Amino acid sequence: MSASAHPPSNRVPASLAIETDVNLKPYNTFALPAVARRLVRIREAADVRRVVDHPELGRAPKFVLGGGSNLVLTKDIDAVVLKVEIAGIRLLEARDDAWIVEAGAGVVWHDLVCWTLDQGYPGLENMALIPGTVGAAPVQNIGAYGIELKDRLEAVEVMDLVTGRPALLPAQVCRFGYRDSVFKHGDFGGLAGKSVITKVRLRLPRPWRPVLGYLEIERKMAETGIAAPDARQIFDWICAVRRAKLPDPAVIGNAGSFFKNPVVTAEQCKDIIGRDPGIVHYPMPDGSVKLAAGWMIDACGWKGKAVGGAAVYEKQALVLVNKADARGAEVVTLARAIQESVYGRFGIRLEPEPVVV
Ligand code: EPU
Image (cartoon, rainbow, N blue to C red; front, side, top):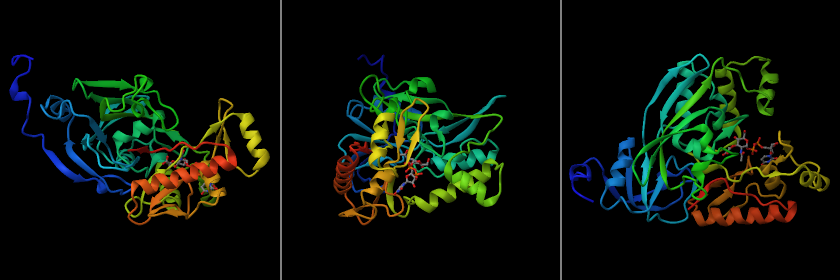
């Protein structure tokens, strides 16, 4: 490439610091030990361009690290770790039908939920306290208590890891599914490993309408006698429900639900109910049925069981925790044993939610 096509002054900006042998334990919510040989902090979208243009880093394999909330690290990482730390939240547009809010990928998801409520832009309250960052939210299509990210997503801003160019992806092209998106897959046109999410735009519908109907919310409504809760009330209830049954990653390492809830056909479900009448299941709009993986794991007697430092959480069998200095391999061994036992009893293969590296 000629010097004029690529001015040297743009190629190695002083601001791009490469850290070596970085301990990743504080950077994954499971608190698993692993080392990044090289790590670069992405503090603005232009940093991705700087990485792409860098003489050493440009061609090296990359590993994008968000809040590390959906990750099981089993080994050190040789690829260049791009740790996304892009900050900032702002109201982009106040439309008649929605508030459009933009947040940097490095913002803590729960901080965004709190900010929107404080500013008077409700709509994210059912997704309070989900661990992780804003940039990780579309990857997983995070969801809880009747709302998924896709229901509130306007667009995702990404930087291409080969060209260093930005693109704004509208929600329709993100191929959102249950805990799934175009960002989770590298094949069939997927974007995993090919781009970095730098900003996320949310669409918070006006007028606000509460999303109720979930058993735990209905229980709170009955207990308190509040029939028409506002967004702040729902937020408080969700925080209380989650704190009661899900472990706080700041106290005990975990990655939320470890397995997806499997979806089966109505016939398969009938068959399973015939054998296990108590199984918790939810009919889906398309006729399929979602089974509660936590119930199945619990029914197989896994609550509290451990492999080394990795254990099944006592209050919610779908959550695996780092009880005492667990290694990633122990988490994986425990997960496999659970998968085998659930398959043996129910004939269902559980699929892990987090990415295993
Ligand atoms: N259950 C048991 N024993 C257990 C765990 C669950 O019997 O040990 C039963 C519960 O009593 C309940 C049913 O299984 O009847 C479902 O449990 P829960 O309501 O706790 O929800 P979940 O299916 O385990 C899903 C999401 C969560 C989300 C909640 C609330 C998945 C994989 N998980 O959990 O998301 O917060 O619903 O919407 O879809 C996450 O993805 O990391 C996550 C925490």
